[in-house]
Image 1 (tube, rainbow, N blue to C red):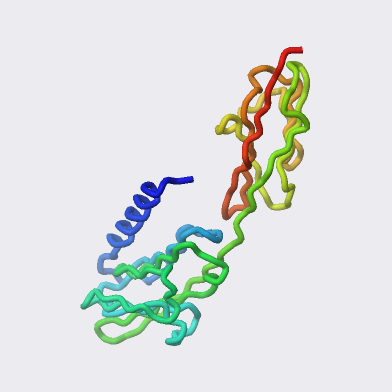
Image 2 (image 1 turned 60 degrees about the horizontal axis):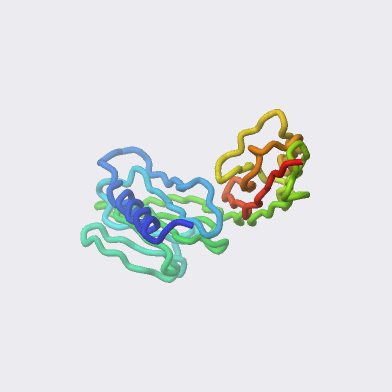
Length: 229
């Protein structure tokens, strides 16, 4: 688990990054990018605005396709550098003067269409939409071994559970990626690891890490001991 000081540092860096990304004058089309492209519950998502027009006087964020006040998240007035929190703000959403919207600790309820409405100095308006999908995080796996004490020259099988479809599995040995050799075999979906024959250098902590493309979790370790015959 990351320390509070590291989390604070990351938060400050993200804030500084967003605050300094005001675009220079351009005629390019305004776009919104999801950063990261995929997010699971509990993560942070940035609706990152590219090519914000230089003559914008105000912009409004809404949590739906149509700009209705009851679904307004926040509004920003550029001449005064002021932000107003609106009904859909909920305390986890932060608007930056670059136009980007940060959503912290996302939940399934944050999924949906977000709309950015901009006003320029000629009072012309522009609507830009982006769809945010929040995925369920992967469950923490467990690791089972048919034996945790193995004789030198014997065999051991480790199983990573649950064996669910759509998961990718990575094996760890002493908290680093496992180096595979000719004495190790994996099942078709990588959920079972067999070592045969076992040698003394195979003694240590084993873990499996599962990922569903949106989040990853690592199992608690299992200690495998190797004894003489």
